[in-house]
Length: 178
Image 1 (tube, rainbow, N blue to C red):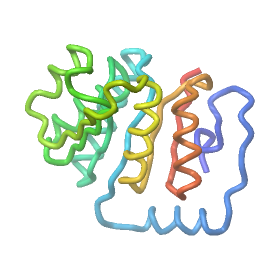
Image 2 (cartoon, rainbow, N blue to C red; image 1 turned 90 degrees about the horizontal axis):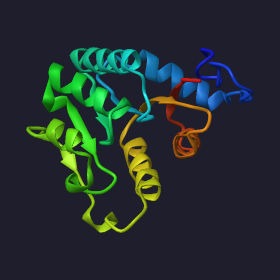
Image 3 (tube, rainbow, N blue to C red; image 1 turned 120 degrees about the vertical axis):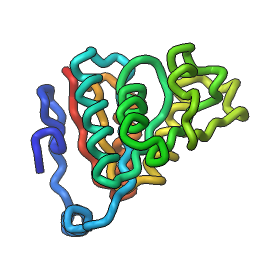
């Protein structure tokens, strides 16, 4: 397990010891030769160089035959994932919004033009963005086998989402930015 998966990248996050079931599931996923559904989620406060890395990661995942699932949001992880996946193959990208397209920032709305697989939730219009994002992240996690997350140790919504993913025995790779 990499330092990032153990909660590395600085800080005092305690490493949890994986169970035999979790290790067996990771081994099966690594050995799986077919395409996977990979979620890329993370902070909207992402430096440009990190955005470029996320974009390349999404691009490479899609070119490898994987499906990328992400959300909307302001400039940051999700927009970079959308750009990379769309450049590789828009058919291999699924975008799940926490609320509606109209509630997204203008630059996100522009990026979503032409995207083929977008799910939005008008019934969440009145929710806070944090609450809607939590539900959105859970839905993204439920649809995927593997989650890659770029976050800070103070990204409470993302930390909660990663705990949800781990509780549901998903493969989680977390990159702490602080």
